[in-house]
Image (cartoon, rainbow, N blue to C red):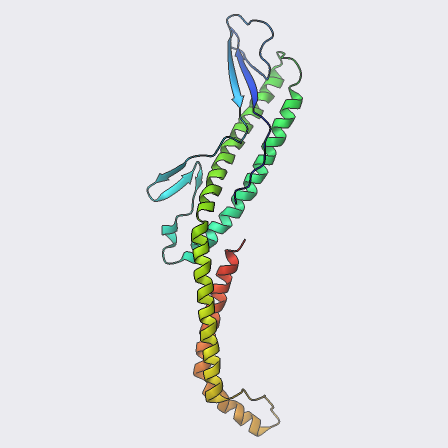
Amino acid sequence: MLASMALSPQAELYKIVDEDGNVTFSQFPPTEKVDDAAVENITLEGANDGMTPLTKIGSIQFCGDIELPNKIDYSGQPDRFMKELNRNQKRWERRLNALEKQTQDALRNQQRYNRYPYRDDSYRNRQKLEQFQRQENNIRQIRDLRCAMNWADNREKDLIEYRTESHAELERLERVQGALLSQMHQACGDEPRFDPSDQGARLRLDTWQECSTRYQQDLRQVSRQLQKVSRSISDTSR
């Protein structure tokens, strides 16, 4: 499911360009009228304002810079698509949680840092600009990740259908395995215990192995298929 953390309210910066073209930034507007200067209000929004719109180029879908898995690329191999979807979903969720926490902490620190009146401090203003740019980049990534997580959540129906089909196939293979074991037992009996000191036991074992060979081959095939389906179910579980 889509994970989210409540962030701090939006923060604001004021970009002030004086008559000489010098640029400064502050969270507070100038206390006095600034002649021949341009004052631009820059809103540093929190990440609570939605997600990047889903876009499509050809058959490939994107959430901003995130390329989403394309089911067409896994034609005939739904298990691989579901594993890739599940792997990406977990990775996106971890990254989203980390960025939301980072953004929350940065906004909180910025509010503490900017409690002082505006002053012409180039180093401080440069820090403000760098912080603003980092926050904008983080928020863009958060929106992309929310879009990707929302898209993945909408694939939940595909995932449920796949798991249902996989469990049905697992049950079918178990029935085939049980039928083969029953047929082998009826045709060949129980497997004799190996006893190298007993020539009769060795002969009985050789006879049993010869009888059971064709059943053993089929059982090995069924066993491999069971392991494959079981792994697929495990790989797409959360």
